[in-house]
Every structure is written in structure tokens, then in C-alpha cells.
Amino acid sequence: MALPLLLKLLLSGHHSSKRLLFGISLTILTLQSLLELQWELPTLRSLPKVLQAIVSILLLPGHVALLLSTFQVGRLRNFLFRNRRKKLAFKIVIQLALDLSRGLSYLHSKKIVHRDVKTENMLLDATRTLKIADFGVARVEAQNPRDMTGETGTLGYMAPEVLDGKPYNRKCDVYSFGICLWEIYCSDMPYPDLSFAEVSSAVVRQHLRPEIPRCCPSSLASVMRKCWDANPEKRPEMDEVVRLLEAIDTSKGGGMLPEDQSTGCLCFTPARGP
Image (cartoon, rainbow, N blue to C red; front, side):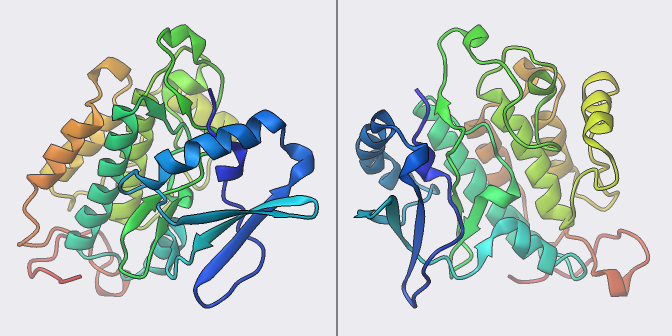
């Protein structure tokens, strides 16, 4: 059963100092969707590192609206774009990665597959805590993997088995996490110059993956490679990813130098604070 379409965040509507109002037309909702929404909201409120800011449902003329807490920093992707030149301190990289991995680990423990894990679908609050959002294509994991097929997700983050139309399971989220981890470390986008057809073919047939910078600590690079392995069975579970990230030492730095300080990727020696 798919999670309610209403949980797809539509960033439009009324803004106030403490709340954001999100809404979508009732014409694209069914009664079943509304019933599912009523049933799912208490569950979603309780998920750590998942969007916990749903306050109430409002029935307005022609619309259903969700009243949500304001996220002052916004989407993770926009945050990374703003830091594309100066890059992120390694401690921040690991903090964001842990927030995301812990959230996905919890979702998977509840048999929920997000199916569209990408930085665009992650929100940051005023304390820079990451929350998973946009459950528009999420669903409960099928007992029979053959029940989950078809291209669902976003180009650049989709696992090879999804791109190839093969059966898949929660490990498609693990692959997408690996791409997000690279993006968080590099503050860059994967495959910016390739078309959909080029990426699809290269990821599936040629095992194309983002190039890991030479300065990336081996412990972090290893997590990336494990997560985006072509074989879903070889990818770690998200709870294992959490343990691997928690074991990484951030005290000596390990992030990328700002672009104005280096012509290439170098590991900086002094640690930078958050």
C-alpha cells in the first residue's frame, strides 16, 4: 500500500513566522487516500529523522492542507548548492549522513521503502538537523520482490535494477543513499552533463558511478562503494551503514578544500568545525 499522496511536499502556499501551509487540490485525491492519510499520520509523526513536523489537517474549500512546522534552512540540495565552492566541514558531512542513514534505517525496520531518496527530498531545520520528506512514491515493501518493479525515483539516484526494470527491494534506497553521500561530501551533483538515456545505459551496462575525490577518506569512500554496488545483495543494510559512519573519526578533518584555496581536491590537514 502506497503512503498518501498528500505527503508529497508541495512547496507553495501561505508562509508565516512559525508555520508553512502546504496543500493540493482534492480533485487528485480519492477517499481511500484521505483514509490512508488519517491512518498514517500518527505513524509518520513518530519516525525519528523523518518529517516530524505535521501539526494538523485542514479541510478548506476545494483543498486539503497540512499545517507543518517551518524548516528555516530548507532543502538539503539547496544547502549543498550554496556551499558548492567552500564545501562542508567533514564533521557536517558525517552528521548529515548519519541523520539520513538513521532515518532510512528506521523506515526499513518498518518495512517502508522510500523509493525516491535524493537530496532534494531532505529538509534541514534551524539546527541543521536533516529530516526525510516527500513520501509521494513510498510504499510498504512487498513480500515478493517481483511485486516491486518499474522505474520509480529520480535519474542519477536510481539503482541499476530499477533503471533496468527488474524486481527490487529496500536496497534501492541504499544505492540512492550512496549517491547522496557522495553529493553531501562533494557539494556537487552527479552526472550533470549526461542525458537520461546516457545515464541509464552507463549505470546499468558500464557500472557508471560518481568519481570519488582522491582526498576522500578511505573509510567514507568505502561506504559509498558498498552502497552503490551493482549487486543489491552485496549492499549493506542501512543499520550497518549507520554503524560504519559512526565509526569514522572526524577529529582530523577529511573534507574538501574550498575551490578558491585549491585547484584540485586535497585533504585539508587542520580540522574545521561545524
